Amino acid sequence: STKSIFAFGAQMEDTLYESTGTEKITNGDFSDGTTDWTLGNSGTLSVVDGECVVTGDGGSYAAAQRVFTGVVGKKYKVTGLGAVVAGSHALRVEVQQGGWQNLFQTSNTSMTPFDAEFICVSASIDLRFTIYNASVSASDKIKIDDISVTEHAPELSNYSQTPAISDDDSSTT
Image (tube, rainbow, N blue to C red):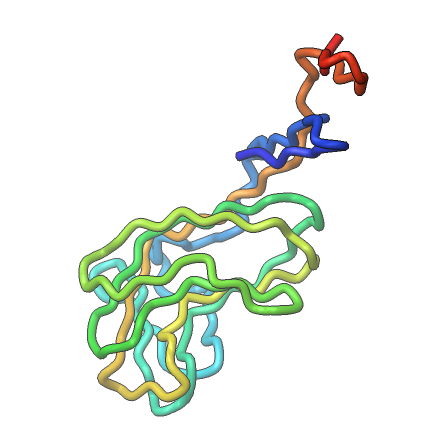
């Protein structure tokens, strides 16, 4: 994706993000159980049929959590599959970098693919896959699988024309 920069209404440049190939998540397929994953807030984690299941335990916002180091200014792409197994609360994919940012939310009971992006604003990134409710019981469950977070560095594009501001209705030279 791109970010455009404008000056006086003239597009100056696009910021393109190219993948650096850096994968930030290990064991995103849960082939090694819940190794490298922790609880966020409350709940229990288990692996059932190769998918991570988060189960409520009476606490709030039960979640599977990964905390990793990012680079400020780089974009991160989060992909995977998620579903609500039981209960009436949504699965939310969220990131904490000084404030919570909702990346994806679903109430689907079948595995649903997600693809979300965010720009890193703090070197410490807290990524969570949450049963989104202030009170979750043992009957509330979500599942996730094939979690990936890839890093993308900004790269300035080349100009196809040099913009010039003039009053003769000619905006490029």
